[in-house]
Image (cartoon, rainbow, N blue to C red):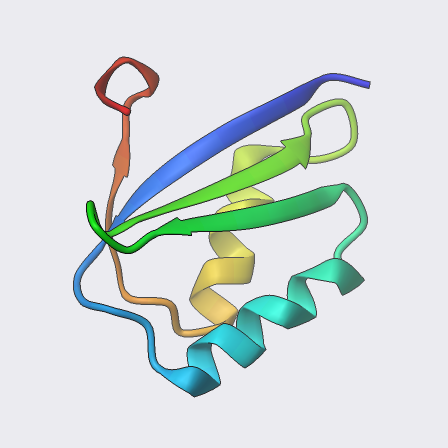
Length: 77
């Protein structure tokens, strides 16, 4: 397994229904967990890169209607 973390900057704070939607990510094989940095308005996703591509993570966020502004490059975290 190859675990990766991808970070996204959010447009605004998450609403309760968006947190619930993120909770559904466990149903996607290979997504491990997420962490929210409320101070910096960043969302970090850990996933198994040997099973998933980053586009799947992005699709999960789109389906959950998470207000992603942009992907943050690893060196900028």
